[in-house]
Image: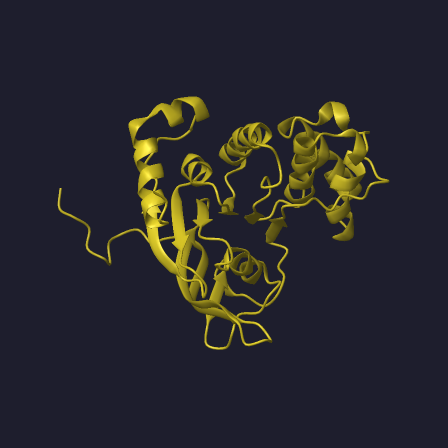
Length: 262
Protein backbone atom coordinates (compact mmCIF):
# COMPACT_ATOMS: atom_id res chain seq x y z
CA UNK A 1 0.00 0.00 0.00
CA UNK A 2 1.36 3.43 -0.93
CA UNK A 3 2.23 5.79 1.88
CA UNK A 4 -0.13 8.68 2.56
CA UNK A 5 0.99 12.06 1.31
CA UNK A 6 0.84 14.94 3.85
CA UNK A 7 -2.43 16.17 2.32
CA UNK A 8 -3.94 12.68 2.61
CA UNK A 9 -2.76 11.97 6.17
CA UNK A 10 -5.46 12.32 8.85
CA UNK A 11 -5.39 15.67 10.62
CA UNK A 12 -4.17 15.63 14.23
CA UNK A 13 -6.76 16.61 16.82
CA UNK A 14 -4.70 18.93 19.01
CA UNK A 15 -5.82 19.76 22.55
CA UNK A 16 -2.83 21.87 23.66
CA UNK A 17 -0.27 23.59 21.45
CA UNK A 18 2.54 25.84 22.67
CA UNK A 19 4.71 27.90 20.32
CA UNK A 20 7.51 29.98 21.75
CA UNK A 21 5.91 30.11 25.19
CA UNK A 22 8.05 31.92 27.75
CA UNK A 23 7.66 33.23 31.26
CA UNK A 24 9.70 35.92 32.99
CA UNK A 25 8.90 36.90 36.56
CA UNK A 26 9.04 40.44 37.90
CA UNK A 27 12.54 40.01 39.27
CA UNK A 28 13.78 39.42 35.73
CA UNK A 29 14.14 35.68 36.29
CA UNK A 30 13.54 33.80 33.05
CA UNK A 31 11.67 30.61 34.02
CA UNK A 32 10.57 29.36 30.59
CA UNK A 33 12.28 30.06 27.28
CA UNK A 34 10.57 29.36 23.94
CA UNK A 35 8.71 26.20 24.92
CA UNK A 36 7.21 24.30 21.97
CA UNK A 37 5.03 21.17 22.04
CA UNK A 38 1.66 19.78 20.96
CA UNK A 39 -0.61 17.33 22.78
CA UNK A 40 -3.46 15.52 21.09
CA UNK A 41 -6.91 15.08 22.56
CA UNK A 42 -7.13 12.04 24.79
CA UNK A 43 -3.35 11.79 25.16
CA UNK A 44 -1.64 11.22 28.51
CA UNK A 45 1.62 13.20 28.54
CA UNK A 46 4.08 13.51 31.41
CA UNK A 47 6.63 16.29 31.82
CA UNK A 48 9.94 15.43 33.48
CA UNK A 49 12.81 17.71 34.38
CA UNK A 50 15.19 18.73 37.15
CA UNK A 51 13.92 20.62 40.19
CA UNK A 52 13.45 24.30 39.49
CA UNK A 53 13.35 23.89 35.70
CA UNK A 54 9.89 25.45 35.35
CA UNK A 55 7.64 22.37 35.10
CA UNK A 56 5.03 23.74 37.50
CA UNK A 57 5.33 27.20 35.96
CA UNK A 58 4.55 25.68 32.56
CA UNK A 59 1.54 23.88 34.01
CA UNK A 60 0.24 27.15 35.46
CA UNK A 61 0.66 28.85 32.09
CA UNK A 62 -1.36 26.07 30.45
CA UNK A 63 -3.99 26.43 33.19
CA UNK A 64 -4.26 30.16 32.57
CA UNK A 65 -3.03 31.00 36.07
CA UNK A 66 0.11 32.66 34.64
CA UNK A 67 0.24 34.69 31.44
CA UNK A 68 2.87 33.78 28.86
CA UNK A 69 5.39 36.41 27.84
CA UNK A 70 4.63 38.47 24.75
CA UNK A 71 5.48 36.66 21.54
CA UNK A 72 4.46 33.21 22.75
CA UNK A 73 1.30 31.50 21.60
CA UNK A 74 -0.71 28.93 23.57
CA UNK A 75 -3.75 27.25 22.06
CA UNK A 76 -6.18 25.26 24.21
CA UNK A 77 -8.75 23.17 22.33
CA UNK A 78 -8.27 25.24 19.22
CA UNK A 79 -8.57 28.65 20.88
CA UNK A 80 -5.88 31.03 22.04
CA UNK A 81 -5.53 30.84 25.81
CA UNK A 82 -7.06 33.81 27.57
CA UNK A 83 -6.91 33.05 31.27
CA UNK A 84 -8.63 30.30 33.25
CA UNK A 85 -10.96 28.08 31.23
CA UNK A 86 -13.79 25.84 32.42
CA UNK A 87 -12.49 23.23 29.97
CA UNK A 88 -9.28 22.88 32.01
CA UNK A 89 -9.05 21.33 35.48
CA UNK A 90 -6.03 21.40 37.78
CA UNK A 91 -5.07 19.11 40.68
CA UNK A 92 -2.19 20.31 42.84
CA UNK A 93 0.12 18.47 45.22
CA UNK A 94 -1.86 19.56 48.28
CA UNK A 95 -5.63 19.22 48.38
CA UNK A 96 -7.88 22.22 49.01
CA UNK A 97 -10.75 20.43 50.69
CA UNK A 98 -12.75 22.36 53.27
CA UNK A 99 -12.16 20.56 56.61
CA UNK A 100 -15.70 21.17 57.90
CA UNK A 101 -17.36 19.67 54.81
CA UNK A 102 -17.85 16.01 53.93
CA UNK A 103 -16.24 14.29 50.96
CA UNK A 104 -19.46 14.61 49.00
CA UNK A 105 -19.92 18.27 49.87
CA UNK A 106 -16.34 19.07 48.90
CA UNK A 107 -16.72 17.29 45.58
CA UNK A 108 -19.89 19.27 44.80
CA UNK A 109 -18.31 22.70 45.29
CA UNK A 110 -16.97 23.44 41.81
CA UNK A 111 -20.14 22.17 40.14
CA UNK A 112 -22.29 24.31 42.44
CA UNK A 113 -20.18 27.39 41.74
CA UNK A 114 -20.89 26.80 38.05
CA UNK A 115 -24.60 26.56 38.91
CA UNK A 116 -25.02 23.10 37.48
CA UNK A 117 -28.48 21.61 38.13
CA UNK A 118 -28.68 19.72 41.43
CA UNK A 119 -29.97 16.57 39.75
CA UNK A 120 -27.00 16.53 37.38
CA UNK A 121 -24.57 17.05 40.27
CA UNK A 122 -26.22 14.19 42.18
CA UNK A 123 -25.86 11.89 39.17
CA UNK A 124 -22.20 12.77 38.68
CA UNK A 125 -21.45 12.27 42.38
CA UNK A 126 -23.05 8.82 42.26
CA UNK A 127 -20.97 7.95 39.19
CA UNK A 128 -17.68 9.30 40.53
CA UNK A 129 -17.62 7.97 44.08
CA UNK A 130 -17.34 4.29 43.00
CA UNK A 131 -14.70 5.19 40.37
CA UNK A 132 -12.66 6.92 43.09
CA UNK A 133 -13.41 4.09 45.57
CA UNK A 134 -14.92 6.58 48.01
CA UNK A 135 -18.56 5.48 48.01
CA UNK A 136 -18.30 4.31 51.64
CA UNK A 137 -16.75 7.64 52.70
CA UNK A 138 -19.11 10.16 51.12
CA UNK A 139 -20.19 11.46 54.54
CA UNK A 140 -16.67 11.41 56.02
CA UNK A 141 -14.66 14.56 56.69
CA UNK A 142 -11.11 15.14 55.37
CA UNK A 143 -9.46 14.45 58.74
CA UNK A 144 -11.09 11.00 58.75
CA UNK A 145 -9.41 10.02 55.47
CA UNK A 146 -5.94 8.74 54.65
CA UNK A 147 -3.65 10.91 52.55
CA UNK A 148 -4.34 8.83 49.48
CA UNK A 149 -8.10 9.06 49.97
CA UNK A 150 -7.89 12.85 50.33
CA UNK A 151 -6.01 13.07 47.04
CA UNK A 152 -8.64 10.88 45.34
CA UNK A 153 -11.32 13.20 46.71
CA UNK A 154 -9.36 16.22 45.42
CA UNK A 155 -9.27 14.56 42.00
CA UNK A 156 -13.03 14.07 42.28
CA UNK A 157 -13.50 17.80 42.93
CA UNK A 158 -12.13 18.43 39.44
CA UNK A 159 -13.55 15.40 37.62
CA UNK A 160 -17.13 16.30 38.56
CA UNK A 161 -16.90 19.29 36.21
CA UNK A 162 -15.74 16.95 33.42
CA UNK A 163 -12.88 19.12 32.12
CA UNK A 164 -11.62 18.24 28.67
CA UNK A 165 -8.04 18.86 29.80
CA UNK A 166 -6.75 17.63 33.19
CA UNK A 167 -3.52 19.10 34.57
CA UNK A 168 -1.81 17.26 37.44
CA UNK A 169 0.97 19.03 39.33
CA UNK A 170 2.68 16.18 41.22
CA UNK A 171 -0.61 15.29 42.93
CA UNK A 172 0.93 12.31 44.76
CA UNK A 173 4.37 13.78 45.42
CA UNK A 174 3.88 14.27 49.16
CA UNK A 175 2.69 10.70 49.78
CA UNK A 176 4.71 7.67 50.82
CA UNK A 177 5.99 5.38 48.06
CA UNK A 178 3.44 2.60 48.60
CA UNK A 179 0.45 4.98 48.62
CA UNK A 180 1.83 6.75 45.56
CA UNK A 181 2.11 3.45 43.67
CA UNK A 182 -1.46 2.57 44.65
CA UNK A 183 -2.74 5.94 43.42
CA UNK A 184 -0.87 5.57 40.15
CA UNK A 185 -2.84 2.38 39.62
CA UNK A 186 -6.07 4.26 40.36
CA UNK A 187 -5.13 7.19 38.11
CA UNK A 188 -4.32 4.82 35.27
CA UNK A 189 -7.65 3.05 35.72
CA UNK A 190 -9.61 6.31 35.87
CA UNK A 191 -7.91 7.72 32.78
CA UNK A 192 -8.42 4.51 30.81
CA UNK A 193 -12.11 4.80 31.66
CA UNK A 194 -12.59 8.55 31.07
CA UNK A 195 -9.92 9.26 28.40
CA UNK A 196 -9.40 12.94 29.05
CA UNK A 197 -6.35 14.82 27.84
CA UNK A 198 -3.93 14.66 30.77
CA UNK A 199 -0.68 16.51 31.48
CA UNK A 200 1.21 15.20 34.51
CA UNK A 201 4.14 16.96 36.18
CA UNK A 202 6.32 14.42 37.96
CA UNK A 203 9.84 13.76 39.23
CA UNK A 204 9.37 9.98 38.91
CA UNK A 205 10.69 8.45 35.69
CA UNK A 206 8.97 5.11 36.35
CA UNK A 207 5.66 6.88 37.03
CA UNK A 208 5.94 8.79 33.75
CA UNK A 209 6.68 5.62 31.75
CA UNK A 210 3.86 3.63 33.37
CA UNK A 211 1.17 6.24 32.78
CA UNK A 212 2.10 8.08 29.61
CA UNK A 213 1.72 7.95 25.86
CA UNK A 214 4.61 10.41 25.61
CA UNK A 215 7.14 11.97 27.96
CA UNK A 216 8.47 15.50 27.46
CA UNK A 217 11.83 16.25 29.10
CA UNK A 218 12.71 19.80 30.14
CA UNK A 219 16.13 21.39 30.47
CA UNK A 220 17.58 23.22 33.45
CA UNK A 221 16.17 26.72 33.97
CA UNK A 222 15.25 28.53 31.85
CA UNK A 223 13.14 25.54 30.95
CA UNK A 224 12.46 24.35 27.44
CA UNK A 225 11.53 20.99 25.93
CA UNK A 226 14.76 19.22 24.99
CA UNK A 227 13.47 15.75 24.13
CA UNK A 228 10.24 13.87 23.48
CA UNK A 229 9.96 10.11 24.01
CA UNK A 230 7.02 8.06 22.71
CA UNK A 231 6.11 5.29 25.16
CA UNK A 232 5.20 2.35 22.96
CA UNK A 233 3.68 0.04 25.56
CA UNK A 234 0.30 -1.62 24.96
CA UNK A 235 -2.88 -0.33 26.56
CA UNK A 236 -4.81 -0.96 28.68
CA UNK A 237 -1.83 -1.25 31.03
CA UNK A 238 -1.74 -3.55 33.99
CA UNK A 239 0.91 -1.95 36.26
CA UNK A 240 2.52 -5.23 37.33
CA UNK A 241 2.64 -6.76 33.85
CA UNK A 242 3.74 -3.48 32.26
CA UNK A 243 6.66 -3.09 34.69
CA UNK A 244 7.80 -6.63 33.88
CA UNK A 245 8.22 -5.80 30.19
CA UNK A 246 11.77 -5.32 28.93
CA UNK A 247 10.76 -2.16 27.10
CA UNK A 248 9.52 -0.60 30.34
CA UNK A 249 12.99 -0.89 31.83
CA UNK A 250 14.57 0.37 28.61
CA UNK A 251 12.43 3.52 28.68
CA UNK A 252 13.32 4.13 32.33
CA UNK A 253 17.04 3.83 31.53
CA UNK A 254 16.74 6.01 28.40
CA UNK A 255 14.95 8.81 30.25
CA UNK A 256 17.37 8.52 33.14
CA UNK A 257 20.29 9.02 30.77
CA UNK A 258 18.62 12.07 29.20
CA UNK A 259 18.16 13.55 32.67
CA UNK A 260 21.73 12.74 33.71
CA UNK A 261 20.86 9.93 36.12
CA UNK A 262 23.72 7.42 36.29
